[in-house]
Length: 124
Image (cartoon, rainbow, N blue to C red):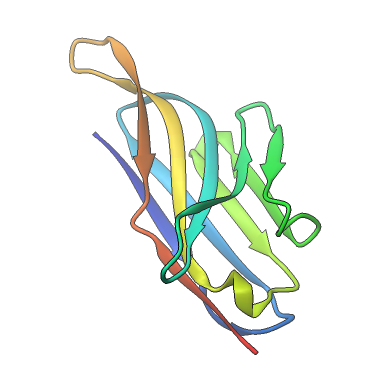
């Protein structure tokens, strides 16, 4: 079993900064991509940013130049630094990991996991 535990987030005024982090633990052989998604009330979950094990990143157009995704492969942790926050960034932010999970017999299979979500609220 694998768990993703998020931390960070909170309340900030527009123009401010916040950071969130997500640590993966459990029966992990390797992690391919990790990333962040968000879901605002009444809206679908959307991609924010992803990062591969090699460090290649992908951002939603709405956050380019303001958000930075990074990861520490040794710690199986992904980070999201959010600057110049806007009220429209308000959402629950979810961590996601695409990984290879180990079985008790030593085999592995590809799996995808989500964190529990952390609230980010930007006041105007």
